[in-house]
Length: 556
Image 1 (cartoon, rainbow, N blue to C red):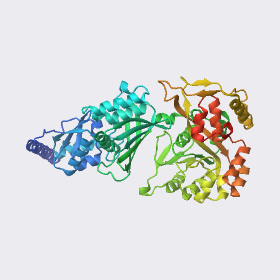
Image 2: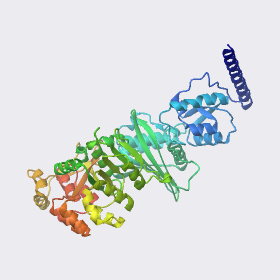
Image 3: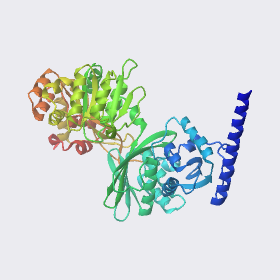
Image 4: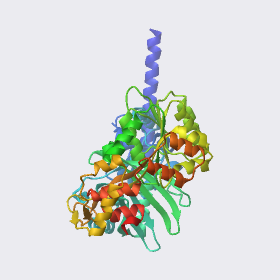
């Protein structure tokens, strides 16, 4: 009986303390000339709450209780809290207006408890991202029209909050892989990279650019008050009910901060081996290599050549419930179901080399190393390949043969390079002709005969695929469905297999040219040759092949 009595007294005291705190909150609200809110009787939507990360909210003694368009309603304890003032200033700079409501600290603590229900909290310092409105203005590929609409938004003071949203939405809809914001002396240039080429969209006035930059920093989790140092962040945007991650890079420049936003469209990881653009003989080769239990598949090429997309396609092809697959990436660009992905964090000591050591203790069957950058990573990766693991990785070289000297330059022993590597694949991305407007043109007799001679000189396996092909030449025309006659990209490849003869050559520290010569004798079709085959098959143009690979000397 006494126990029940003590419980009732405790409950009464708790209730009285609660009521006293709410009366104090009401009094402080009157003094501050702000409305009062009782958070115990207010239902707070989780989507609203997580617009500010928990740690930031606790420091500011605040909680978001409502959100409409570019307005936030925030419950606070003390309007003079320095962290709150800093938060409100950042929000205002990003074009978000704030309404403040006085609450009790007990009410805020009650509301903060709901953060436990948030499964994936946003990155520290970031808002929940950008919700792009689905409007007709995003339909179509007319870049001039997009530019004029951005300028219209800029002129309307009531619509400036939609500038970033519109830039993102139009870029994604047109298939841009990157968005460039480049300040100049007078204004700032907006450019989209589409199918590998940069297109000028419009110029923003300095005040508009500052607004867009501040808002972008805020949603990316970057420091608004830092302008003299490089910063990297990311956020998620939603368009047509699909979440798309944006990776943000900001660096200082002569006339202000330069921004590049990389669009990580999840449709990219839906690509299969067939979608990559592999010839049938190359496809048969990679199918065999992916079935091997150990060794290294090394993909080479410069930044933006599609290496990551190819590696992800390989992972999709081999993924099985019977295999454990672990990756180490910098950064994780796309999230893959059924695969354990880790990200390097040099600040905490988790590098490619240290991460790879840790991964090997996790009993993996297949390992993906995002990039070989140093000797330690190269050695650990190749030793893993020699001890029963299938390893996928990338290297920055111009062609397949160049991968071997590059590994030697890093300090790798030639005695293990050959045995550890199964195949080296070099690749580039080349623009595809638009199927709706491409135009067949009659080739001159000399060019026709040179192409026929090229096909006749192909390795036997490859030549069989094109034995009955009549070479055709196409040109880009342009239509409302494409960009200057092109739409989308496919890969051009060269496959260098490392058999016994190649291993022996590498072990004797052969030159790049010697490796390339042996590769040709064993049936390697170089990237330029693969591009020519795609051109005469109607997929691209010879001019596009030359733009990517250089002049076709034998066509001159």
